[in-house]
Amino acid sequence: MVTEYSKSTTKFTHEEMETFITRGYGEQFWTISTNNPSDMKRFLAKNFPVKKQILYQDGTPEYMIFEAPLKAIQLKNQQLTEAEKELSEKRRQWAIEQNKKNKEAK
Image (cartoon, rainbow, N blue to C red):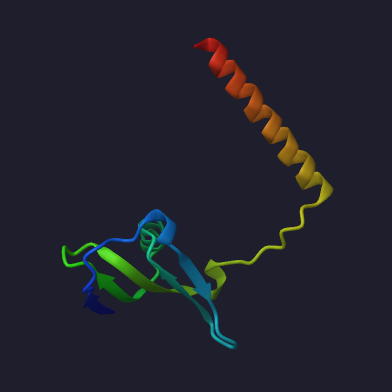
């Protein structure tokens, strides 16, 4: 793992935070680049190896590059089946009802 220190004196705002997941042709791993602290924690928790990290002067991470196994990330077709749409609608209705009950209980 390569560690560098940033010369930046300001931290990223929420609007500037982003995560990129890429895979080159024929590669057997995903490369994940992120400056989002919650994503960093998530990938560290999954024990994805850190290839490079850039730290602020106070030692907190500014940017990390991870390498994830090919099977760790799956691309899913976003087209829902009719059964999935129906189930999704039932869950949405249930959540609305629960919110109403909670408001009434207060």
